[in-house]
Length: 173
Image (cartoon, rainbow, N blue to C red; front, top):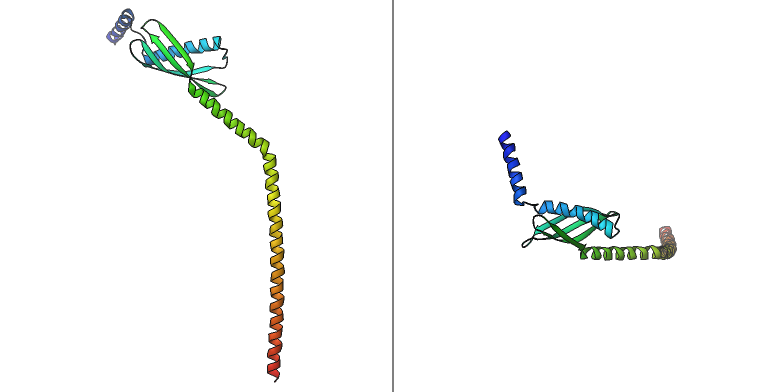
């Protein structure tokens, strides 16, 4: 067991001496912390909470990726570029164009919602007028049908009485 601990310590010291640095995941964590501090301080995004930075190694010392943060429950994305030579980290981030599409979509949805809210009383009034007109028309049809049914009943009753009278007359003969 002690041999493993010694071997691990020797490897760690050798790595540090040789300038072994961070892998992509560790670099992403480092940049995330740096972005959190810098963006809140310089751009006034006091409510920004960086949640993740994912980087992929490109050519040489270059890395690129995406940073995600949250402001008031809304996800904010950043395009992140980074140069890391094993010792020094230089990073740059700019808001992703995806944010603008999302904001435009949210604004459009908000505009539609506001328009619907403004139009709702008129829609409600129009629906009530349509319902009232339909109810009135249904009442008229009911009255007309009842009248017609009454006429048919009266005609059938009259015809039945005539038939019965005719049948009585024939029976009496």
